[in-house]
Image (cartoon, rainbow, N blue to C red; front, side):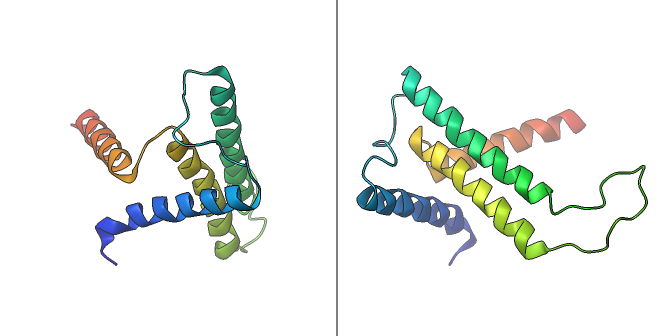
Length: 123
């Protein structure tokens, strides 16, 4: 698989999941893209985004030695668990993007644009 296709592939897998879940549990996800100006859809997007944030917090719980004022608590780090929680978070964020009608190309362009903007700040 080409590197350029990976983001497209990730969006496709998430869309496949959304469709599969809707087939198994009708109404789990709305028809995408949602009309983002509607209050109930904004509430749904907010809820899905917060679920992604919760998953990020679960990933952060695997970091044990981040407090500078405390001696080393543990040298243990479960990279696999950390990454799994991070992927869970990413899945929620991908779902949100799909629900609002953002595709891999638009996300990539926005990412590049923001990257360039950040680089300009450094110069």
